[in-house]
Image (cartoon, rainbow, N blue to C red):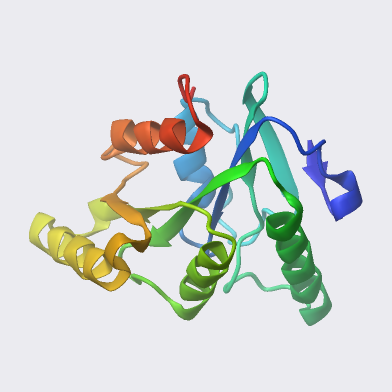
Length: 188
């Protein structure tokens, strides 16, 4: 189910894990690989296609929530402001929200919008797991250095891992993180 306003959100029950990230960080591809379903979340060559809050039931009472991308999408300022209000309402109103998976392009590392999302999650005491996506685009040493840099910056405020939807690097670790954030049971 998709929502364009807080009134359209699913009932606030069960357990949810939200997935957020810049519009061009590979969020939809990461979701599809983690849940092992093609086009579960629609992918596009054009960043910013996720424009609604999309609720995906993984099993009864457990959902993955795909949030609109931020920071890159070429949309009107009014639309971007609406997304901001929609996300703020989502994070502030959802008691069933158990965690956040933050998708970050490893080549860009943490950007200002990512830091804002991390600060917002911290303000509502929400556990965060960071996927450094597109790890296949860097040499192994560069990827390891980027991982260490982000881990050092975040300290104990979030767990961090390397991830590649293309070559399936880090998929099991990401599934385990999702399971942990959801509570108990399998992720997909």
